[in-house]
Image (cartoon, rainbow, N blue to C red; front, side, top):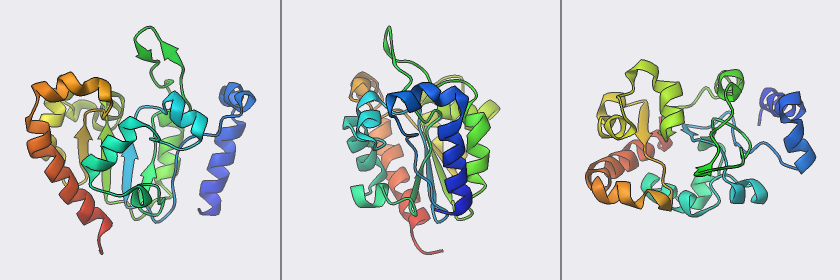
Length: 196
């Protein structure tokens, strides 16, 4: 990592808003190196990932890597993938699943991190929080409509549904996702990771 990226990470750790995470022994769970060509923006780390210190280290991550068409080695190589969630820490459990990412985290830190990634070619937006932030008014009314309109965001962005096993009903109702979006995603990821 560049010295600037190291400095940003140190600032995130030292941020008073993250004192609770420091006290719990948590590290900010993201990865970025100046050579990264694909930026993956997700929601926030899950409990298992936070405790392991490795992003997307769960069943959702296995499915996501399958959709992307990449190996674990590629995915966890920060010179290939920058993994940049909307919140760098597990937000805790809510009444129906994990709590949402804390507001303001992405707004404060993402622009500074992205400024240090001059080789990025593709941004993959996993879930509604990432899509709302990065697409703004370009997002459709629903996540399903946004994902279905994926071609409108190419070649620099691809919106995805969250790969959680809990989304099996959504996937069963929307077979076009596996038929159309996943092959297109694999092609644009392969292109982004390939030679310039």
